Image 1 (tube, rainbow, N blue to C red):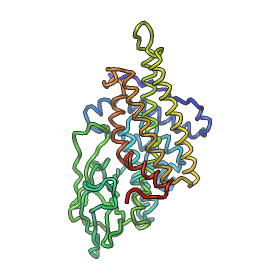
Image 2 (image 1 turned 135 degrees about the vertical axis):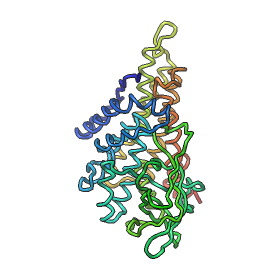
Image 3 (image 1 turned 120 degrees about the vertical axis):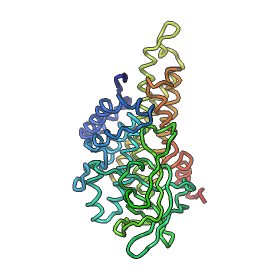
Image 4 (image 1 turned 90 degrees about the vertical axis):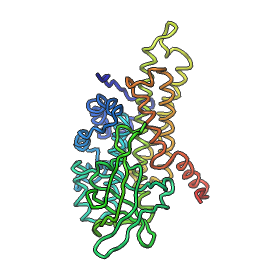
Length: 393
């Protein structure tokens, strides 16, 4: 039987006073949903590695898919801090659940809204927002991870259609996705986006098995064998590598918030355990080394909360830079990983069991620290930004 979720959110510097009533209502709504619908099932989901598809319409009904998309296209028309808070609370439940919503929002709905034609927006966005259809994002390839500009997937103009060939790897949601936003090179070697419906002839989406991480979400491939893509499915609003990277900025921003959720869950678990677990005649929270761990955790969570809140303000004002997003993603995921590891130590052997969420968060974060820009790549993005010297070339 699942342990009741008794999570209490740390707010050491009273950040809630900087949020609007709407922000707090949205956050609390998602938090209650996670406690009610995600926490009771997530350990079994991750142990069995079977994604709970029945959670998708529930996520949609809460507005978790494309919350920043205008209401005329089925979104909620919310600001970027609201989006961040939704991602924070979903990842507090599990990184895989947040990843599913993040892909749908930032990597599928965002490019259609930003780069798509009016017909494409009308055709797809409301269905994506409602969860009637699900999407995935095809950028990473077997031979090209941190260097997406080297992609080999390509398409040719065949008059009445584009002929698409290639493959993508490590694609969240692909095995059950109805559409894929696929980035490929045209005949001029220029990167462009295509909306590929996964039931098109020549498309296959094999699932990736034997994962030790993100077991609460579905990962797969995208394989294209002479796929005839209608010309109306080309995203015409932007081309070049900056187009998919613009999508990743939105997704990385959501991850920066999400990682805080995972960190808060580990900290709250460790704090409560340290007060309940007795050794040598007193709770282990009374020992200096345990207090050191807990004090450092709440300090790092608080710093990350303000870093990310400020980034949300800048995004609302259209002032946030890609480099600022990279800094927040890198800092917060590394912070969350450190807290997961320290929390596991506080729980001792109990920390590796499914009775507590810490080991699951730790394994998930090992993926989050790598995907959508690795820890090291984001460091070099900051280095490039402050020195003006590109270390990638």
